[in-house]
Amino acid sequence: MSKLIVGPFNRVEGDLEVQIETADGVVEKAWVVSPMYRGFEQILHGKDPRDALIYTPRICGICSVSQSIATADALARAGGVERPKNGELALNLIHACENLADHFTHFYLFFMPDFARDIYRDESWFSPVAERFKAVRGRAAPDVMQARAEFMHLMGIMAGKWPHTLGIQPGGSTRSIETKEKVRLLSILGGFRRFLEQRLFNAPLEQMLEIGDQQQLEDWLAAGDPAQSDFRRLLQLSRDLHLDQLGKTDGRFMSYGVYPLEGARTFRAGLWYQGVAGELDTTGITEDISHSWMEGQAEPQHPFQGVTLPSGDPDKGYSWCKAPRLDGEVVEVGALARQLIDGQPLVNDLVQRSGSNVRNRVIARLLEMPRVLIEMEQWVRQLKPSEPYCSDSRTMREAEGVGLTEAARGSLGHWVRIKHGRILNYQIIAPTTWNFSPRDQQGISGPLEQALIGAPVRQGEREPVAVQHIVRSFDPCMVCTVH
Image (tube, rainbow, N blue to C red):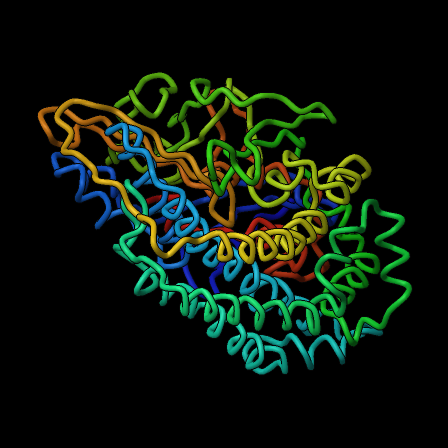
């Protein structure tokens, strides 16, 4: 038996340390460690509730809009604010822009460069993969960065700036859109659609969404050249490296749902376990600190009653991350959960066949792009420049509210309690907090710790490439995890 410490994993953000024990060439035990603490919950204590709109986007520079949406939703719920349809459409467009840019960046700049590592030099596909995806120097990087920058112009038009826009408010968006700007927005979406259709999929977006099961996906892979489609290249690598057998969890999924419009959510909320879909009751959410460097609550607590107090005892736990649970159970969140619960046919078939694994998480993330981009085109067309984009909000003295949304990485929740016009308690559970949670008081590991068990470790590897694939398949964000 040998022990390894792997990390940090960051190409852009966040500290993460994975401790593993290996025997007979596989991972036998794993501990996921978040070694950094920030404590936005403490910063917010005693502040005017409206100040949360200033502070919480700064939790993260990648999903700051998601943090803003969660805050605005919590304050809207606390204040009984209803948004006009234009406000809902505008926030959905801003939020979707950030989420798709996140998926796009993850695939090209975080996940695929791992296949250009020297450890794969003897594989038949290595040369074309390294030429296109090698970190920083691959041919894809400049094209991807330009396409991403042009897509993010939508954010500039609708939100003023990114990250940390102040345009997102409980009542909607402070930025109204003129008729001529709708044309510009559709042009931006059209440019991003062209990149996805020409380079990522090499097929129309609508055609990609018609692929309904694994056999159709394999037929589609066989009908084209991986050199012309980055998605086909992913499928080729997944088949050759058996990524559908890597990084499995127990397959219990949760989604809050996202992109609300006129009383419904474009991606519905719910649960999924062993082929059975269920309703989501968020009163069953608790946070366990038994293996965290935290103190102040003897038993797991719902976020409305929970606290975030750092402990001075380094022997108490092994991470600054808490352990969120739903009805006492571990759940996985993210694009795979979101697509599965929403009933995406291909994702449902893949999960029924092979469960939650590295391949299926990345496929679900990529399939979300055509689905959401088509929705964005419709949302722009529904904007009515002559009608309001934002409702007035009132000052709250005594109230509580919850904001539940979906960041690119998964379910994000903000819970706020207000007393005497000030924040009495503010608690945040981010997607990576769910996926990278430490053990709970029952000794049950979180999704990533489960997924790492059985991962192969090649002779002499100090940073096992299989561990890297598994960690990146969750697209971790550690700054959100520790808030």
